[in-house]
Amino acid sequence: MIHQDHYQIENEQAANTPHTEELAAHYKEILNLLGEEPEREGLQKTPMRVAKAMQVLTRGYKMDAHKVLTDALFKEDYSQMVIVKDIDFFSLCEHHMLPFYGKVHVAYIPNGYITGLSKIARVVDIYSHRLQVQERMTLQIKEAIEQTLHPLGVMVVVEAKHMCMQMRGVEKQNSITTTSDFSGAFNQAKTRQEFMNLISHER
Image (tube, rainbow, N blue to C red; front, side, top):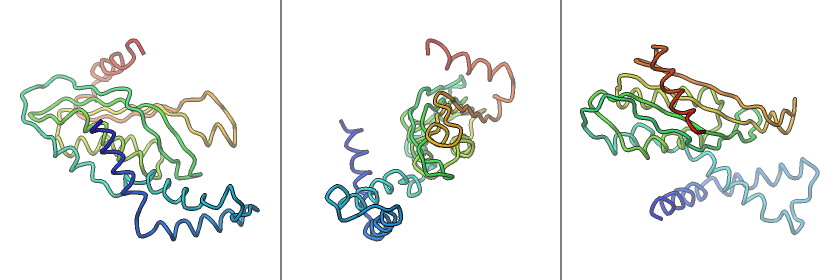
């Protein structure tokens, strides 16, 4: 319940900024340009709804992934792989501003410090709530963990479906795009394979 309330407060804050009215005015003009009638009953509140929704969907710009990780940083002599897998994410492709969504799997090998497991999911949330490309998001998640925790190694795998492929262009409904990035101990093929085996188990 606390977790849900925290996100609800964040969303409410993101959706009510000094720019909300200005954004709504632009979306009203977009409806006009598309040939719609913004004053008809079904669309009267749409510009404001979209303005608020877009601010929630891009709230990651106002958040600091490094601070999130250091807020729950603990000294611990544990040097085996820590994995947080199947982290759901939703993002917006910066090319068409259409959604892409899927799962993120993260592993790191501590080097004297660990962070709260939920903080890894928060890092994913921060970078996915921006206009993105999947490749950059994968790199940003890895770099945030690497630069903050200084672990022996980090690996991130992202699996996603892109609405820009499903709704327009090639219209391939079932295609999945997979990206990965890694550093340190994960440069060894054996370590990477161990991670891939663990995230594939019983999925």
